[in-house]
Length: 318
Image (cartoon, rainbow, N blue to C red):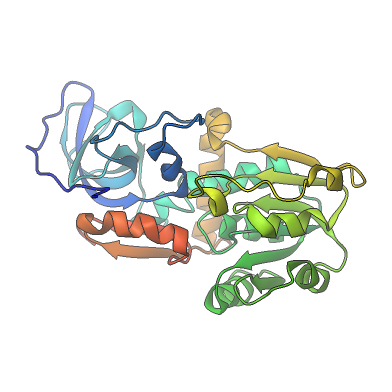
C-alpha cells in the first residue's frame, strides 16, 4: 500500500492578492504525523489524496499584489510542490543576508518561535537553574538549549547519537549531553549531568526519558510539553506506572505548548531570533534532503532520528 503519491498538475495562476511562488525549500515536521490520523487533535486531519502542506521558502515568480514583486523571497504555508499559491497577506519576507534560506524553516521559522516562547514564557528559566531538553539536537530543542544558556542556566540535552551530543556540547554550549541510545539508566545519567536536580524540563519526546526526568524535578519546577514524538506512531499509547504523584512533592507545573497561542507576538520573536543569528549568538544547522520526490523519506527520517537540527527538503535552486 502506498502512503504517498507524486502527481503532476498544471502550474496554478494567481488571483488578485495572491503570489505564485517557486518553492526552493519545504519543511517536514513531526506535528504532520498527527494530521494523518482522524483522531482528535489541535489541528484538522488532512484529507486522503490531498496535497501535503507545510512551511515553505521560495521565490515569487508572479505577483498579483502590490506588496511583493517577482524575484522577492518569501516564506509561508504552502504545499509540497514545485510551485505554490500563497496569499500575499499570509507570507513574510526573507532576508538572505541574515541567514541562508533553510534557516527560515528552522531557527527563524516556526521551530525557533516555538523554542523562544516555550522556554521563556512557559519554562520561565532563572539564572543558575538547570534546564533539561529532550530531543535536544532537533530544530526546537537545539534553540531551546542555547536560549537557556543565554539566560545563565545549566543546560542538559538528550539526543540519539554521539555525533549529536558532541554538536550540543562542543558547538552549542550545552553543559552536558546524554546519548539515550547508549544509556540504560536515564535516572543515573541525570544524577551525573544534573546533580542539583531539574528546574525546567522542555519535553519534545515523552516516553521513558520524561519518566526519568519527572523523578528529578525540583520544588517549583516547570515542564513545557511541546511534543511526544516517542508516541506518534503508537497504535495504543502505553500507560505504564502513573507519574502524576511525582509532581506533588516538587509542586511542579506541567503545561502544554502550542506556538500558535503566541501568534500576535511572532514579530517580536522573529526580530530577536534574527538578531541573535546575525550576531552569531544563536547557531543553527539544517539537514537537507534533495528532491521533492524524496520529501516522504525526509519526513519519515524524523522518527528514526536521521536529522541533526532542522530537516528540510530542497526542491529547487541553491
